[in-house]
Length: 130
Image (cartoon, rainbow, N blue to C red; front, side):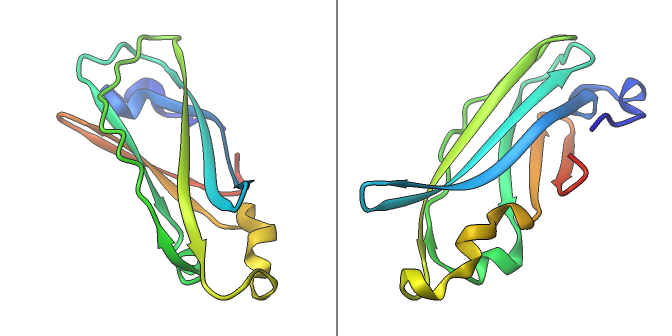
């Protein structure tokens, strides 16, 4: 979804999210919340930025343990450039597998994508709009 005012913004405010999704991955006996984000820059950023995720409080109520993504690497983006971010968060849900219908509908939950720059911060709430 395009932010109609991104051309008015500087720094991380000029970042557009082109696509974002959340799903559950199972690898062997391990489970991961997997989040993909594709962005596009509409202006050259003169500052570096970091990306982090805040999961919906309701979703967190079903989780016993989740490991944060420790990727603190700063990024830059140029006008017209596209970047892809992938978060693979190890997770342990409360209860046994049969008790957790939430796992089949992770994409029903919103999450916040934070772009944190040196001089600015922008939050995008991922929901059914994109």
